[in-house]
Amino acid sequence: MVTRYVPPKQSVAGQLFDVACLLALVFGALFLPIWLQIAVPSRVEKLPPGVTYTTAANGTKTWSGLSWEKLGQNPTMQAQWKKLGYSKEKAADIITHPFEYDIDVSGVVLTAIVVLGYFLFMLFMSEKEYRQVIAEKFD
Amino acid sequence: MTDVAQAQPKQHLELLKVLGPAHIWALGVGIVLVGEFMGWNFAVGKGGALGALIACWVIGLLYTCVAMIDSEITSTVAAAGGQYTQAKHMIGPLMAFNVGLYLVLAYTMLEAADVQVAGQLIQIGAQNFGFAIPWQPFTILVLAILAFINYRGVFMTLTINFVITAAAFVTIIILLIGTQPWNPGAVLLHKELLTGLPYGWIGVLASLHFGIWYYLGIEGTCQAAEEVRSPGRALPMGTMLGIITLLIAAALTWYVCCGLLPWQYLGWDDELAPLYDAARMLGSPFFTTLLFIGTLLSATASANGCINDASRAWFSMARDVYLPTWFGAVHPRYRTPFRSIVFLIPIAAIFALFIPLAQVITFSILSGLLNYTFMPINMFKFRRMWPLGTIKRGFEHPFHPLPAIVLFVLCSVTFFAVYLGYGRQLLAMMAFYIVASCWFAFHRYRYVKRGNQFTMPWPRPIGY
Image (cartoon, rainbow over all chains, first blue to last red; front, side, top):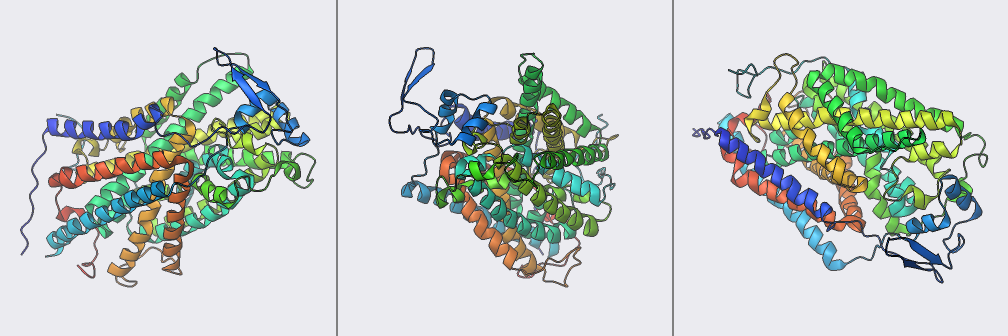
């Protein structure tokens, strides 16, 4: 015969503490890395050959050597950009920022270990807990 | 003395069983259809227009596997909480806690993305009439109205969803007709705008990340399992019809948008509403207004369904003492998990107001992806512990174990796709779940009654 586990009753203060822990976790792990711009998409700036720009103190960019053709835009694309209200300078801010997919092997391995380790830990602990549940339910 | 039913045995008020297949379809598609109006286009940014199309097909296969597995298990474990309750019965409490969190975060972040889009769209609409207004108050207003509707009752919530989802879907069809697809080159300019694969096949792989967004949330159908009149019929039928609807909508959306917009514009991180922008390209106030309304309706319907689903998952965890029991209360009059509804709203609001759209969406996608990774493990255990014929199943999916294997492989590949471009955000999300798991396993679980975790009237599982 299995001894039934009788859990302690949680106080109101304990419940509030647990809610605070979860909120701290949500904002600490998810909100802050984005808010502090630590976890941002890996876009890079790639200017076409012969294209440069200078940035004024107020952030305004002055381009030189810029053309739709250098941005790789055919006449149809140019027409569509213009319909959307974009000049070539404004479009250049988008087109010159592609993603960078250089694969860092150590980064991939680290991420894989973290994901795999998480699942293994969870399955191991769950199995242990599940056996207690089944024993209490059926024995 | 409070007039609220607390999460104690024998004092439960039960959720009302009022939903049919149409509501299940509306719950699934209502949440997901917004993925055609915004967010999917970031797949174009990661892999080009053709890359996004390939992602749409590959991820469509992933979701077909999800729907097959989900239909069998959900129609058998017909209880609120969906995959959370499944995990509790088949894998164990810690897995269940994590699955509950996946659901809550996937839907809460999707809800945040929805209301962010709704607020910004209202701002754009006002600008078109010459009014310069901030978007943030409208985001909060939309969220507050939807929270109130959800607070009042599930039937009203999902009936409204059915109407606005159907209306939003019709706007996509009307836009397609307006682009004269029978006359290539007249309006749609695929030949000139499609540029092959700008990043090569690595870009196609990377675009699987946002390919998830075409369909994310369809598994939400099983959140309402406890409120369905006939789970064995309504859940598989509603889910399968939902997947078919989404496959059609995704293909049409891609076809229209990629025939009108340059891929770099479409895939840019700040691009809010691609179908609305596609409508603008037609130069017709009718289409612009129509897609403005369609996008707004779809975002609203999605947020509405998300509030419903996230609160049910949170409520279920509280009812099992995985979370403070205070959240496990059912409203005595409206019979809704009102405290769970109200608690999650500010979290959605803060992410909606301060986090960029592509990154809010990525949080939702990652939680969804972790949930899909759990499903094949769940399916293998389910068939092994209760083989066919040992318990009554509402639906038996064919070709097992093929869908489970395909799903597991596609999930693994999609994790790598997220790593490409969003690696740090992936690690942040994993850090969250690892710390939360330790918190549950080493602190919270001591308040949980062991035997109460198994509530289905099934025989002892084989191997235990």
